Amino acid sequence: MIWLSVVAFIVAALAAGFIVRWMRSHAVVYGNGMPQRFHLGDIPRLGGAALFLGIGCSWGLGVLQSIHWGDPGSLKLGAWVGGWLVALLPAVFGGIAEDMTQRLSVRYRLSLTGASGALAIILLGLSLPRTGWPWLDSVLTAAPWLSVAIVVIAVSGLPHAFNIIDGYNGLAGMVALIVCLALAHVALQVGDRALAALLVSTAAATGGFLVWNYPRGMLFAGDGGAYVWGGVIALASISLVQRNADVSPWFPMLLLIYPVWETIFSIYRKAVRGVSPGVADALHFHQLIYRRIVRGVFHDDESRRVLMRNNRTSPYLWGFTLLTVVPAVLFWNNTPLLMAFCGLFVVSYVMAYLAIVRFKVPNWLRH
Image (cartoon, rainbow, N blue to C red):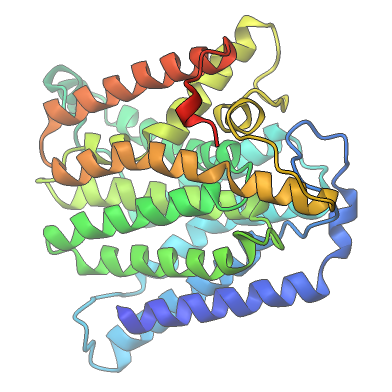
């Protein structure tokens, strides 16, 4: 598992370095007037390609190790890993196409991530066996199609949730890395070494990308990177619950409650204003922190000033994420407690959002 992680990190880091050096020209199509833009200059947005290459090489090496080299790590990685990669392809290629051209509409990208969800069901046999609510579990038993629909929604929706929180250097990448390691930890607790290996490799590839993304901001993950993280984590979350009866379905929900609730809340506030959910704006939680909590930086170089302020935003959200990850890892098999923490996060998020909007942030939080 360590060897696969080293390969994932090195391949992703080298591929990212190649993109930074030789593939900057596509970045000029990303307009300066975009509301979610908080940087100066033309920065490559093809970090997703580096991530997918690192993950693919690592997973492929793991399969070869398990099938042809005696499986020294007892990972039991087989041909089914190829099904994971094939299932991810529509979403990842759609995200990369958007990063290259800026012409792929939200409807087409949602269709492609939905295709990844359908492939996950066909190739991997994914389903949600339980929800933690007995009455809803009985409904799933009586109507198996509902379980299939939930899987498609999860696999198609989570990539877009990660895309929403991908606004500042190191933000989405570090959240994805933390979530992958948390899922891997619980997978090892229940003896699912194969799933843990895929997740640790994904975390390592993310680390290779972060070498160039934080704090220097030389490469962005783009839609492709968000779709890689969202797709892998969605597949892993459903697989962990499906393959291990001890794991509560609310464990991955609490792990991912920040990007999931950010998406739900964004849809709600846009609907209230009569705006389409697909229209980008600058009112997400992380953007409010950048505008109203992170103090201005004084520096003669404007681009350096913007970069330094950008880098100070992400740690606030890393801490916010850890507030859900820690209880999720501690109580991964306790459904009622996990549900309570999910509710607590939702209330805390809304209160924090309203406090920032109303300029009622304590001075000790401003940095």
